[in-house]
Image 1 (tube, rainbow, N blue to C red):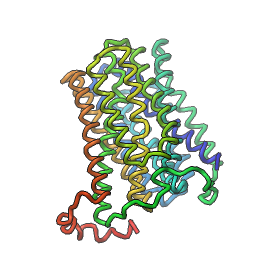
Image 2: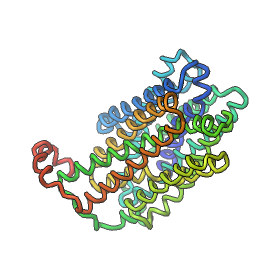
Image 3: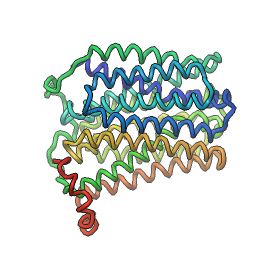
Image 4: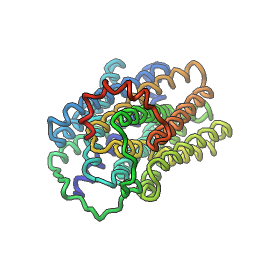
Length: 411
């Protein structure tokens, strides 16, 4: 089981590298192709559309093929895309390759997350935190490498690292085996997972709660995607930093993410999923506001670090919280949550790139804050629905026929 866990974490490390690779060299990339931030936003949109396509495709294939085959193919797809991107082909082809790279990343995320949700019963959040730490380590490593490569004017060779690692992991996953019966049940449980006290939801209310979960993860995907891909650009334009110093901000952000995700494995044993998410998004909003109002280089790096700490566990705990609220539906819930996260990472960064060009960095930052505030509002709605404090009896009664044919998915 250790080999399975380690190999899964290695794949998440790879997706962390590839997720940040474009954003880490975005200013140089746009300069090389002589395009604007609006086009950069469209590039991120194409990548996120690839992620969404990967989610949909993997959701279909996940029940028809063994996970090992899917993971091996996905790693090889990433390798092929990264080797081709290294050549810096014409921009339309570059966008197509980035689309394929994102398909492979999405497939890895869906397959591994679904396996972990189904295998590590009662401690999904603790187990998912290991994956998220691995992703964060990849996302933390890439900007640091980018800063070095940019300083030596060899930034394009970043893609060699990801391509070679993808090939190695494709080979490794041909030899990995795992079993759900091999899990050590003595391992510590999540605070929510250790209790069976959650209020059962009606079939109609499950669909409504799932809809709100899809909405908040859509917002979170947009928040993280905007910061991932435009953090260095924000530092260059808002705090007047050089490109190689600005790229360090992404490294600090993901370094804090790694620390926060490692801490999540312990914190989530004490806090319920809802309390953890409320504290995290409130801290995220506070960090963004301090960054905007103080507008200082040193404190800017500090608040980027606190921002990474606060955001570190939001995606994984949202995913686990959704599966906890709608049990025994991992093959349905996990792709929906992952897909909407990818869609958010497509839509919002495209708007962010447009806003940087047209409205300026100041207004763009307030737009990013509004995304976080919207997440908080809808998270509160979810908690109220689960607790029974909000009633939608009339609406649910009218909606009942539309869902009648799908009830068995939740049994």
